[in-house]
Figure 1 (spheres, rainbow, N blue to C red):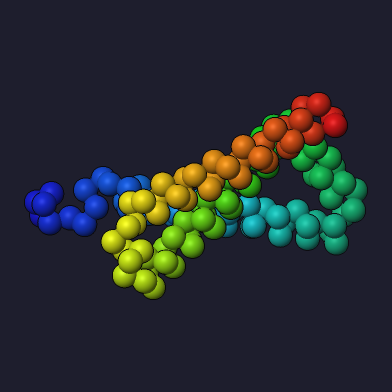
Figure 2: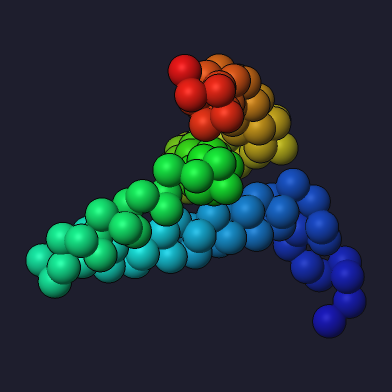
Length: 124
């Protein structure tokens, strides 16, 4: 297959496909861990408290910020995909919509990260 016959050729659409799948898998694994650690309360409340205690470290605070980033990016890109699949005008402007997704993501993270990281590292 020659490069001319491929759909994306490394453009924004292909990279957003990769980002969407990657964030989806990351969110799935978070949900698996979340269900397991929550179920631990039935088995042993002490073990549950120990696990929850480990989540209050700075490393998990950074992981938590990554989770928020993955959810936000996955959600904004999902809306872009719905628009592209539903309306022809969105298909014609999908490159611009990719940059809208990144802009919304950046705005959300600029608002979220300072406050979150101040709680993680400053104890505020």
